[in-house]
Image 1 (cartoon, rainbow, N blue to C red):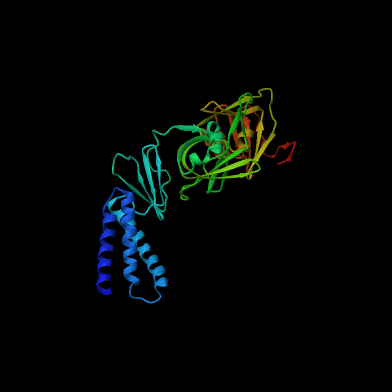
Image 2: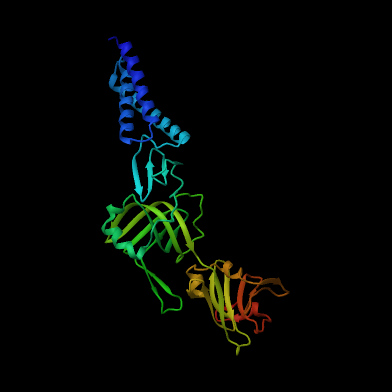
Length: 360
């Protein structure tokens, strides 16, 4: 048989095999075999009459492989089919995830041929999370370490408390205990295991999350590192399903025997905060947690602007501005000092009053 005729036959058969591989939507092994044989035939016919066959074989392999990946993506995107070329297939409950070159395909119900294409893997966990069991980090921490291979590359739904936030890249969770006998319900994080939960979509700002926030999310168990018997597990493809900051109320204990004082509390950014004729200020969350204001501000359970947002009124007076609350007021001085004040306090010249920290 002449080489010219052989080349034409190889080209026709190779194209038929490629088209067949893309046309089928099941039998993934058969589709892969058809695609590989088709590519081999196309590469063979391309180098059949050339010198330096080895070099051209490498060149055409790269060209046809790129062509196959591109066509595979176009077919998947246009006709919502499963990809022929898959790096791996993840199965979680009734969900299948086909990971391909630069994208993946979600099949949220394996009983239905419905597929969602996720270019550049931006979606995080895409399917419904309602039927997934939520596991607390305290319950599963030892299991994740001792049987990591069992969980690797699987999606899992976890809840816990945020232990740190690293820019917009990721936040961390650690196993924890809570001291219920302490007014501040102090959370103590353990350092034997750290989950690094990566932000899958950097357009979503995670700076709104704060240390000690309760959080529930789904993510893929990616990798584990060990150093000095302390483990770090990386979690990617994250979808946050619930973040419980919780609303709060403010309670104060008045010192009605006091007429005028000014006690330094703390400094938040450029704002210095004082109290006047108050025994304490407590933040009460809807979930039952209570924190002294100093503790809540220093641990960023609450932001100072969140505190001020609870005021029922704001007015500008001659010497200062005033935020009005039910049981107390907050005085804002011209130098950005704030005084949380008993309503019965004498506020004359309080902005320039000397305290233990000096004249302000």
